[in-house]
Length: 334
Ligand code: SF4
Image (tube, rainbow, N blue to C red; front, side, top):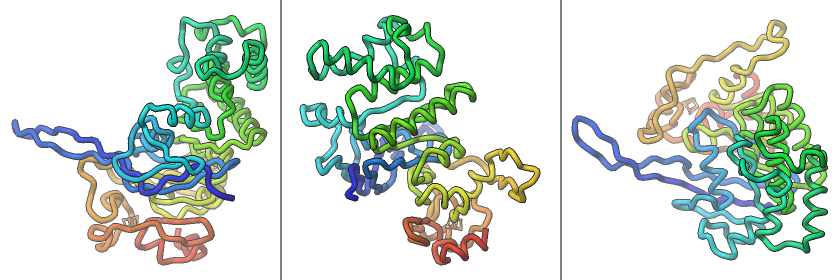
């Protein structure tokens, strides 16, 4: 199946000023560094990594909310750029985003029915009656009953608000949904409901979905594939079940080891503690950017940058030591 969304070598660099001993220097912050990926209709790709690794910047570039410094993004064969022209607005109908904070994403002064209907009015889609029917249908599909339609966002629970945000994103019948930490602001009991709902809607509508999260359990549950980011780069990518059960990159191993397991006492998995904090994206270490924290680094790691290399079908890793092994050897080495 051909890709719906394609990113080729996308990079986002921000100019920054740093001050040291009264000396101001102009520097560059590489928030996203030469990332290429593809997303097909009906596929869910998880994007994971520590805070500040560039996940949200990448997501916003993919739907044209911020421009790329270099590289190209295309959706359904058409270029995506951040110029707010008619072509961009037409593409944006097909690419919607669900944000982390539902209260911040909604207008506190408008009843929720009006907010969900608003995108149809702005885009001039359908008659008044058709807009009403579409709004009612989408709100019902996310589990919001008609008794809640006249309510304001602050009158709803967190889970209900996130359902309204999802309805607002889905009312235009998009083909791509970008979810940026959609459940991290919700109670644990509500998280499962919203995740299951997203999963059902995604399958019913054959949506392509980019799912950003730092919760690997959620990613394992909902995603077909996963890409792991570190300091603006993808360092491992592949089928979610494979990457999350048999990670190849030492950073992915450490992330997975930090997830508490319900049967922790019955598993032999040990927590891998990484040295120090992630380096500043203004001062990215030479060679492999992970080398100052990597428990298995060798001299080559400081000098040479590793690139994504296939170790199994659809599974790539950027690591000098692990890329030279096939998948079974990686599993044995971990
Ligand atoms: Fe560790 Fe070297 Fe692999 Fe980087 S390339 S992850 S430093 S072993």
